[in-house]
Length: 302
Image 1 (tube, rainbow, N blue to C red):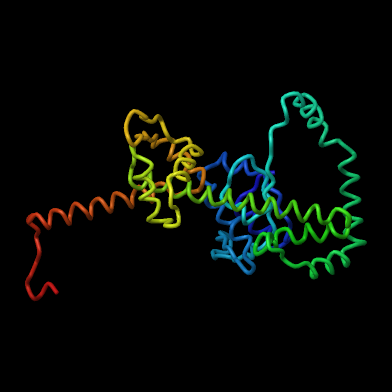
Image 2: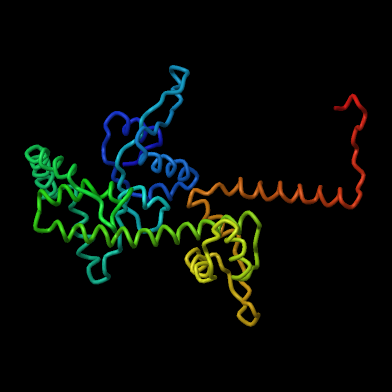
């Protein structure tokens, strides 16, 4: 189903559910994606509240939005460390007919109803054991912090339901967490590159020049390799002139804007910020060159 930001806030406050969301629906409406993404990020913080203006009562109401979120997606979303990330994949070509056939019967498949009933029954009969194991679980050297908290309920259920599989699930959680940290790092670099390109209106650049600009925001980046990967992943390079040394990269600004909007970046604010900086530079240059300014230096002007 499709719902609004207000629906999310009210439901999170009153029902405290686990939201399982298809992220594609938000990307389809990119103007709202930034707002929804901010709400989903806020849902990870205990005590975090969000407000809605009630037109009938003429006042704002606050709702606590702390609640678990799982997002099914085929792409990077920028908040993988703040939700349960379910990576979706296209079925292999040879299995697509079977996939489409099974999908057409999902709504009437009795097996899913049976699974739901059995899950409810398991929760009712084993919730005390799950809570005890949940309290006993401790972080590992590879699974800690926020990642441990997200996996903790899954690990508790696994240890009670399938104790012989617990170590396998734990190793999987650690592997996924390590890969996720690397993905998030790449996503952060790509976002910084996008912001620099749009803020400075870059249409041509070299890897060394872009690295210099990125290091102003991320000084820990030492080489150009992450910059090249970011440009490749973003797909914003129209073409590159390898005859030049260093290689010249030609940037597609329109495509960069599209990528930024889909990531919830406020493109308009970036471009306005650049325009203001240019205006300030022009004013400073004029002042240094002795341009005429109409200053009122009388004592009464202070």
